[in-house]
Image (cartoon, rainbow, N blue to C red):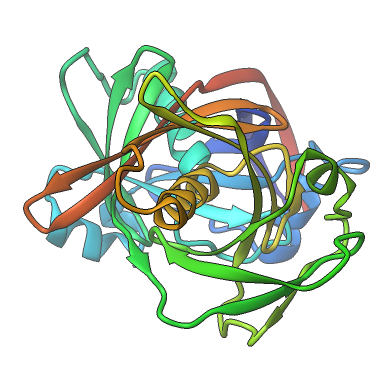
Length: 293
């Protein structure tokens, strides 16, 4: 049986998604259907699929409603290979833009919109560049991971950081080394995380800090999607890692340049510990109708 979908293509700093409304939770696509949609030659082409479903109509939404009863909408995110992911920092900004443009939510300046995800409820506000999402508390992993990547001369130590989904951040020597890395091949992690991880490769800008804002460049290999032009949670993890390496006096405001543009990262105190926020653009590119087997 085929599924008829009205879809929208959206992107945030080049991280692109197929979005569709499924308020009642009737269209839980299979991994193969998601992969078909994301195929860049035979499908629409995207880094992932974002299904907009009311939290009460998806099993994972129960935890979101228990955390915040106002989290009416749940972002059901699937990677390009069809696998389930906990969160997506660029995706949630595009997701909120999509909900607004479809008239199912309102978000006036100064107000917050809670969105359910598998990493918990995430609060989104409008910002000067588009939207800002509070990614919540972050966690530094205790053990170091050795990372090997094609065209990177030697294996490098990686810092594990969890911002609702897992990341391993690797510092490279310079821009030339960053550009030479071949991220069409999955980096090898030792030890390999049980659930896998997104891997970010970073270099500092010169100077690292300008006008109180830290500046880095980043490329990323996302689990389940391959190299993408941007990864929002990865940018947050990269900024957190570089701040950690820089030590005392490092700023809490960061600008992260990725192949698809620039995002902002901000660390700030909260009642339950330090949070990290991500800000950046979100655009809807085109829409259409399709029937998927």
